[in-house]
Image (cartoon, rainbow, N blue to C red):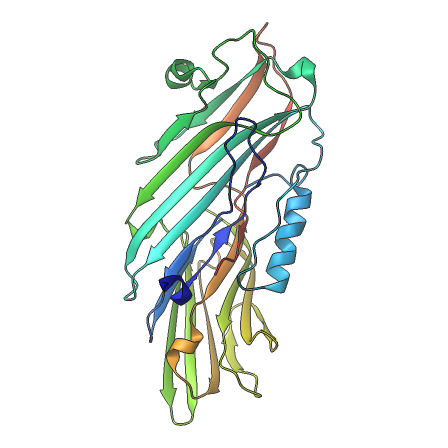
Length: 318
């Protein structure tokens, strides 16, 4: 299975059903790496109030950096507003051994949770950008014409209430491309041997337009009693001797540090031992340009307060 030679990163999503029998699985993104160089891509959405429990799960995964582990199902706290709308995305990327992009897929879901039955007779106005290449699909109970013509997500029967008590999927989207410029973060890793040592240069390049938080780049290390010698690092690093991993961390990537690098030295070894590289990060915005304009009652069009938001929160997947 070539997944054994894949490095990458992915995201986690709520595993609960959306209320219509459509479960949502984990997010993931992976990239193949060659023997001398490789690139790993990735990216990885919820508000702090509504998804605090999820965020804590994500932090635990990012702190432990456990290969192959999946984050447990995320259970949101009871929202402060009766109506909460959450946008989630997952991203999968595959690279060929020479670093070229084989495929990239984005899958997103907009979910609404209503706590109070008095607020169940509502409709959601959204605003979507150009989103070239994105395919949108509404839930079968949503009025497709109302969505297409007016950008409103409402039930076909406006006299029918939305179910209460659990998140309900109301809109989904999908995007596929082979355009490498669409990938949020690219990692280049260049091992080389000189004398009795292996020199590794690794760099990241983040796309414009988004900020990436809690970024971690995890590089496998050869088994050795000697820890690697880090000559330079844009950010911080730790060595996990038990797992034989070097963890490079950047708290925030924004316009001030779209590019960064690290160089380290180990005893001489096969360059393939430094792959797969794993990447984790979180982002407060989604790749798809979709915004919530407002929520109103179907009975009299009066506005309804709502909470929630969009967030990518990746987790490592091997």
